[in-house]
Image 1 (cartoon, rainbow, N blue to C red):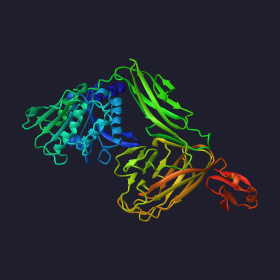
Image 2 (image 1 turned 120 degrees about the vertical axis):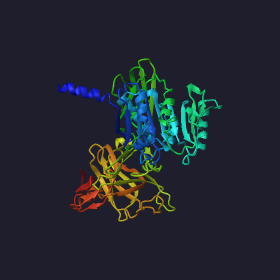
Image 3 (image 1 turned 30 degrees about the vertical axis):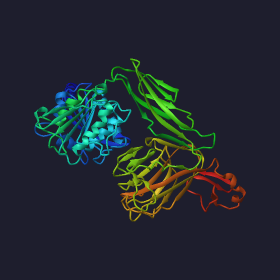
Image 4 (image 1 turned 135 degrees about the horizontal axis):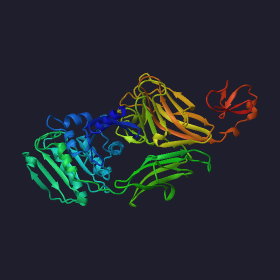
Amino acid sequence: MKHFFLSLFLLIAGMVSATAAENITVDGVNRTYNVYAPSALGEGRPLLIFCHGYSQDANWMQNNEFKNDQVSMESVCDTAKFVVVFPNGINKAWDISGNSDINFIKAIIDKMATQYKIDRNRVYLGGFSMGGMLTYHAMNKISDLIAAFAPCSGYPMGGATADANARAIPILHIHGTADETCGFSGAQPALNVWISHNGCSTTEKVISNYNGYNGCKMHIWGGGQDGSEVRLLELPNKGHWISKEPQVYTGKEIWNFCKRFSLKKTAPIVTITSPAEEGKCVSYGPKGEVKFPDVTITATAEDPNGTIKKVEFYDGSTLIATCTSKPYQAVLSGAKSGKHKLQVVATDNDGETATASVVMTMQTPTLALSLSTSFSEGNAIPAGWTLYDSSEKRSGYSSGFTSGSRVLQFTGTKKGFTYGLYFRNVNGTAHQGWAKYGLPEGGHSLRLAPGHYKIKYRVCNWNMSNFGQVEVSIDKLSDNTSVASQTYTPNINIGNSAANSFDVPTQQIFEFDITKQDDYVIAFYSAASGWSDGVIGQLSIENVSYGVTGIDEVSIERLALSGDAWYDLQGRKYTSKPTTKGIYINKGNKIVVE
């Protein structure tokens, strides 16, 4: 009887419409969205993703902008049987120039394909205001994933562009003539770019009093490549908002336009999930003895109209492995220094193929390696780095962050450096606020051979008038234990504004010994106090010597005459046994302190 009621419950649950707030991790960041799926949805149904405006969120978009007593997007979904997702932008805004929100959209598509078995050929994207700007951005970035686009009351303020590699795409742009935020006059120039790109007729067809709505006009430019067309729905005397008029309801207009289009893909879809683009392995060692760590390549592959027969992994033109079933994974071993184009080729049961690739760099530094050259874009997380503030973790390259840990661009008339990596500790727990280079999720690895190394860096506080210590540590990747560390208290506080002037921080030098070849992490920790912070600039690492690290230059006989004194390999004297890990000389013996 218990099993009967459980089965009945599950059956009923599958028949009930559902709105859910869900989350997904993208580029190391927890992202959230609302999803609505009608009852008895079935498989192979379409997906619409619609993005809110600036300073709005998913709840507002779904429950206020799109809804009143007469209409709602849910009712359109229930009738037409498709899934709608309302994503949340970071800090209620969108990255309309970088990849962070493009990757978010791609992740949503993958999640909906898994969760609701949506039809990848019928995925549609729209957005309001800044969400419309993101929609235009996506036209250039992921036209191969989106069947039709529906921007509303938003377009690129600096002028639209059409990437030469973008396919001909169907577009419905909806805009009010009285919009004072994004003027109606800017919609046509943005669409002209795509009318030309699509090869549409430049002679428009106009439907006046569209759907019986007095003064409303539908402008149509048809005849584009692959059946594409561009439309502009002109809403008379409408301001900067979604139309909920009975004759012209924005949600229904979007669906009626988009449902006509499909990507009609039959080829397989393949994606490399690891390593990330811009991946890098940095490996130090004596000339001719450098060894790079193994790189695990993972991929996903599926076929819209069949099954995956095989997935092949290549390093350039060299076949690494072939998989005929999940998981699709291969290991690159014994890689040489230089750039490696890692390719994954999926073949389906019809013999059609698809390819995905990333470039992985194997680097063997011979001089000082700058780790701060990637601090070159404000409000971004640089490749190779992972930041954690005791609440949120951000990893690898992503952009569009306007608060929290990120790269800051300083604009004061006097500044110690132009860009700095800001990290913080929200709750004050020791070692719970940090910036780390070399973690797998950051996309870069750091392998050090036995030897003596030097790190140079400049650091200051961001918003700590009483100053707070910053600790730099070399940690083993395998167990997160510290090999060596140094603590410094900055004497410069920027003052919580990137426009403030500040002096050049004193260059700090951190020297340490590595006794075993391994993968390591460079970690900067802010103080163990609430809202402690640090800003790093001009950071580099270099090898001073390999092997016994200058042991030949130290007179063992002379040191042996010095009683119980200890010496490091630079000749510095210690009156008792050192506690910092490294190689030391005591009574003529070389001793490794673990």
